[in-house]
Length: 364
Image 1 (cartoon, one colour):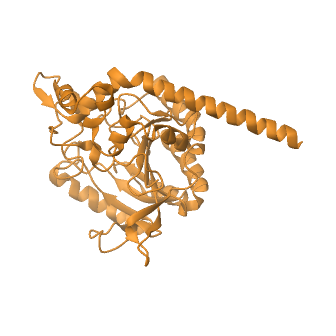
Image 2 (cartoon, helix red, strand yellow):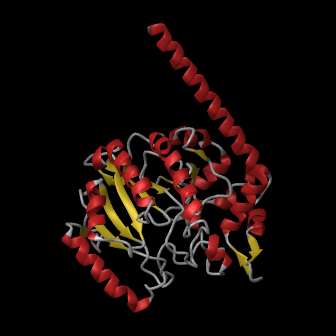
Image 3 (spheres, helix red, strand yellow):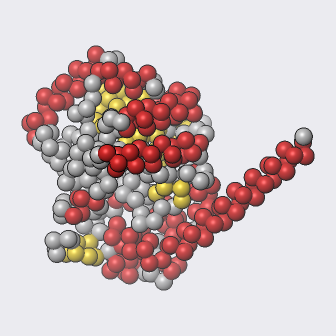
């Protein structure tokens, strides 16, 4: 796949008002122990059930014969905040080590980490690079993160830049079209945030952002067709393919997350899950980035979907976005469909296991 977005833990040292999931927050005592235990229990199976390679074909980079060339994809590790202790030592570092081993230290998949930036130190930078991190992406550079508003960001970014460069990281080039840096060895660093004009500038209608009335996305904003949306999620092995994973292994077609997961990597492989969805009109519509066409075979016209996309905010103001219609469609129609697809996959998995056991018994 070109990209996998893996939220490894819900713990964060912040409780930002624009966060897309209210589970990202500080946890203490027993709650923190439970969050750590959830991630530790799930991550070995999650990583085992990821594709064996993240290499993919990209038509935008043809060879001399005009055929798509093979490129190296990436897995993005995020929170929460991956550098929060004890997440860092008990979850983040073990995951880095297992991923680095699985993807041959970057040859079959590059590792990106996202951090707000305020916990970064030179020793932690070294720890991450030593464990195979290719890109450290500082994601807190916007007015929603307390202490990073406006001009306050400048000295923070200057200090981080000095640390990164001293530790041997290069900043991602500004002119990304003039240089194919994504296939270089790195390591790199960059900065981004939820700023106007950015791919998440309108703020997703999710979590605390929704509760605080911060989403500016109207019916003209189709997150599904944007980067990290549902478009191309089924097309593993090709450019544009991406899925999102939660700490317990639940898989979604987009970072916003649908109302129901597609399956769980705690129990089955990602490829098996995606293959079971191919050809289904609902998921093919998501794959095309046209969520308003999901319900056609269920009796939901595009007009019906648009009507379902209208609601009111917690403050009582009118609001409409395709994500709202997607949520309602998943809630009303897709539960039984997803349950049946999961049952079919697990039956196949059981049959394969029995066949392998039988073959091994016959060989002995």
